[in-house]
Image (cartoon, rainbow, N blue to C red):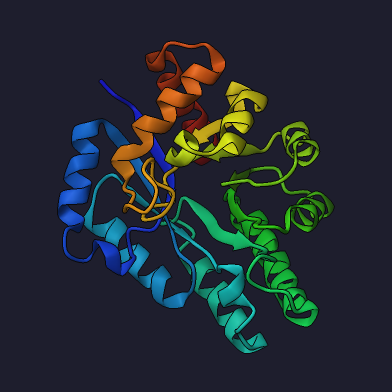
Amino acid sequence: MSLFVDVHCHLEYDEFDADRDAVITRAKEAGVVAILNAGLNHERNLKTLAIAERYDIVRACLGLYPLDAQKLSPQELDEEVAFIRKRRDTIAAVGEVGLDYHWEKDESRRALQKEAFARMIELSHALRKPLVVHSREAEVDVIAMLEENGAKRVLLHCFGGAAALAKRGIANGWSFSIPPNITVSSHFRKLAKTVPMSQLLTETDAPFLGPVPKTRNEPANVRVAIGRIAKAKGLDPAEAERMVYMNYRKLFG
């Protein structure tokens, strides 16, 4: 029995509206047993909950993507925190949350991202749920904030930071997820070698980061990531698959 897991994707995107049932069917046929869908804002959090209710292998993660979080008023931020809090027994994690300095250069709006991220870290503590963290070109501040707030159960999704920063995450016991575009990314191949097997997971970030550039990604492609992780670690693919599944159960239950 296959035990593939996709710990980060976005099946709520419009790109899946025409064939979402078929995407889930292909995932099951490929041996995927768990898909974690990450919400980005209130609208996408609602869609994520609906998708998780519809499909038995999908679990909901609710969060605020940094570029969406920075647009919220203090009252709106409070309301979304309260919304997520009420779904404590439903969700697998708080995410996608974090900082994004690639698309946001203004320091005042980056400060708003930090305020929201701090609230999300606090919420994960209160709910006793893992954090699924986005850190694009903001890895230094993300790691500092996680450390300052004592975050323990952390998934650094698609981590793009330097080796020294990755090693800080490793030392803190955090997990790293590898997407299928490891096929074309030397960075992710290096990350797969560096991170201990006990802290590695697989994701797709679908519809993005597929094994073939400029094509829609989907959860069935986590098999590709497992194959490349196994190669990086000198493991049989079935053993790498089993270990990643156990890592998933340890972090997300």
